[in-house]
Each structure stands twice: as C-alpha cells, then as structure tokens.
Image: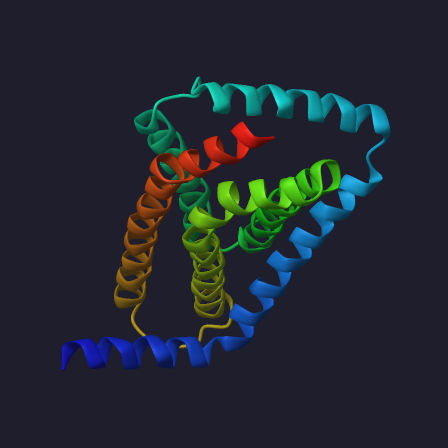
Length: 212
C-alpha cells in the first residue's frame, strides 16, 4: 500500500511539472550538441595537443597505472555530489534559478565535447571507448542531474510565488522536507554511479585501450 502511494505521488509530481522536466531534458541535449560543435570549431593544433594527452592516458590505462578504484570512487562521488548540492542550494536561494540551468547546460556540454572529440579523432574506436568509459555510470548520473535540476527549479518557483506573489499554498516545511529527501536519494544514486565508474568502467577501458 505504501509503495503504491509513493508511486502515485511520484507520478502526480511528474505529471504536474512535466513541462519543466521536458525543458531541462531538452536543455541538457542542447548542451551535448553544443559540446560536439565546439570540437569541430577547434583548430588542428588544439586537437593534436589534446589528443597527445589522450594517448598518454590510454597508455597509463593499458599499463594499469591509473589511480586505485577507491580513490576514483571518492573523487567521482565528491565531484558529482558538489555539483548536485550546488544545484540544491541554488534552488533554495531563489535567485539561483538561472545558474541551475547554466550548470545543467555545462554538464551536457562536457559530455558532448568528450564523446565528440573521441569520435572525431578515433572514429569507431573512439565511439567504442566513449561507450564503455562514459555510458555505464552516466546511465544513472545524467538522469540524476536532470531530475535534480528540475526539482530545484520547481522548488525555487514555489518559493518565488510565496515570496513575491503572496500565494498561500502548501506549508513550507513539508515542501522543504521532500526537497531534502530528493537530495538524499540523489546522493545515494550518485554513489551507485560513482561505484560503476570506479570499479566497472576501468576494466572495460583497459580492454579497449590495450587494443588501440
């Protein structure tokens, strides 16, 4: 009964704010496309310099000279948690709404640039490497970023309505409680994504790097 109730609440929330979820999803995809376009705008010297460092990285992976899985896990978790927490705080600050959108766009741009550069320089091998090194963890991490940005925007808009339009709606504390719960769930999911990035993806990367 409780599970069904939670599912119905989640479905109602998603339906009520579907336009915001759609908007942030499109914004993220625009960031990905923009990141890929930036690759094409780089000159040959810039591409060669970046590709040199990339081949050095491939060599380290093939030799198993990368950082330990434990270190990679904590680095990934701390990095992503800071990003998500910043979005969360910006949602509370009210005036941070535009910055949330910028952060999400930048996240998409980084993904698009990384994949675009690998494919442009290495063709099919680059696509395979991007697939095994970026996709596994981002199957979890990217949806978390998109959902957290949408939730932060929704919370910010509700606070703006209460502050400036004096609309009487739900009490603040239950709204804030759910907002905290969203952050907690997001951090747990990020920990799972970071675990995949640290313990699963490097094995795939080593196999691909050894064959390049």
